[in-house]
Length: 398
Image (cartoon, rainbow, N blue to C red; front, top):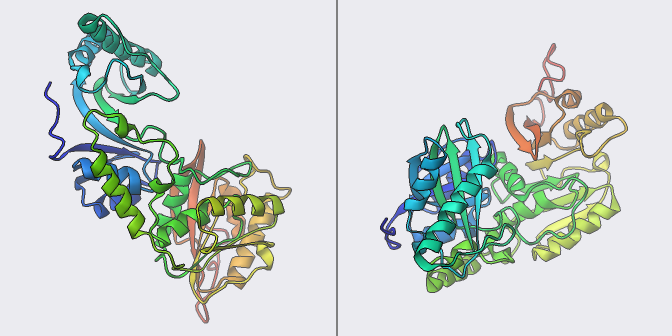
């Protein structure tokens, strides 16, 4: 099989979390990707090598950026082995490099992803043995080359994983609370809020500060890839263009805004969380952009006439509240009385408790925080004569 022309366009697969597909599609469009198509936890597109590097550098809601190398149908075990064996793996993997295969299997006659990954690994190793008499080693933790195998209804897509370590691991976060928010999910929540990156943004239960940091990075036009501690996987590819990647990196550095672009404020009632957030904010170089205070949300006031409030309160899953219903009622009362003119976005995995907020939602977006099914609830907190809250008979509508 001939290697793709690195200077031309090729197919690209980007993976994300449920509910963030449209946000990711917009990010890819901003990179001038072509033929963008939204799927379930995936967005496909077409781009060149520079755009592949840029996607890893800039995409805030992508988990992995994959480059497909072959599609085929696998009827049975023998067929899968033979189809993988057909690929000239010397085009993608050198004998001295380590590799790993990540397999995802759904609705197929093959039941176990580990078994599928093992079959594919055997085919690659056997090909090298036949040609060279030696075999490359497998490294599940830190491989040089990471191969992605996706099988759905026995249709297989084999891809090179250009990212390596998941893109949600930005590198700025050392201190977390007991239930830290995934960076990709945090960026997605800010994206779904429609925040203009200029008006005030408040997180009144900020924990370790992830929502604040992701928002500030957007406002400052800071590429998340600049915090990367480990190399991207594409740096081990045979067609790696170091000069091109350096250009992408330097361009990202030049685009970063130095002066604060928006008022971004975080509160938390727990001093340990405030300290953890401060450490993470400093790691991200955003201490001049984000203001953080130890404060009780219910005693705070909106810092401006309008803006966006985002919050990830306890669900009684990983963090337990003494009275979850009362907590959510207090959230609603504070929003209604102290944050008029704001749009509030509350991520919760406890829809029963959320009814006690007592305000009418204008949007409900299904999301997952880890394995917890959640909703991102939007509340428009009007000023003046327009009534805040529910109409009669709509108490607690979510």
